[in-house]
Image 1 (cartoon, rainbow, N blue to C red):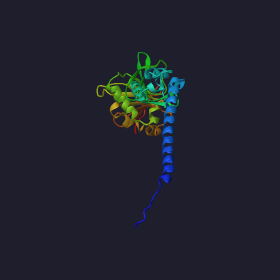
Image 2: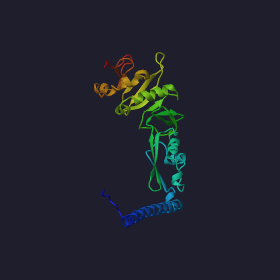
Image 3: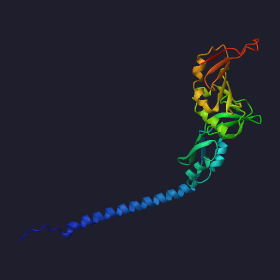
Image 4: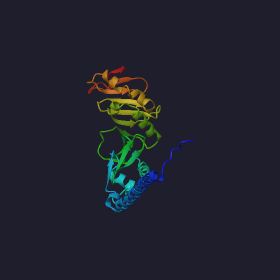
Length: 262
């Protein structure tokens, strides 16, 4: 006769009771945790912690913090969870000065708005006011009445494709060359409607054209380094590269001064 393992009912009952007790305890713990979360949620949404306390704006220079806050529609006291951060960022990107925007929650109840602005490339003289021109060629309806020194001043331009082309060419230049330019005058000729006359911060005058502006002006520092700093004049970059010194005071009118090719 085969031997079989026989487990008595008396031995199994304690184990079943222990298993059921553990299962009941886990269920009770889950229900208590869920209840506690619900209570805390109710308290949180009823407390000032769920309301926007502060809004901080970062990265803005051209557009005021007040304008950004107004466009964002964020206000202290509104519910934190009613804010759609993506929609808020999209509203901010509609501002002409703003290239990109990010809205993030600073726990527990503050928001930080970070904006990336388009770069300032130049100023446009219009109605005795110097208007800011952005790197995409957009002219802002605001500026200064004081002569700007932080970017070139453009004269003779209109808000058209020629201006956008000029800004595009200017943006191709190295920063150090851009900072050497004081004024850019659109000075059309019969042979070239895009002719430019530039006045530089180091005292030289440049004759150029929009068509090859960035290509030729990139070599400006190298050209100037070969000139006598005591003699100022006109650097012609339209076709080749020529320098013509200004006429000295009292010099004969028939004498055009020194002219050399570089």
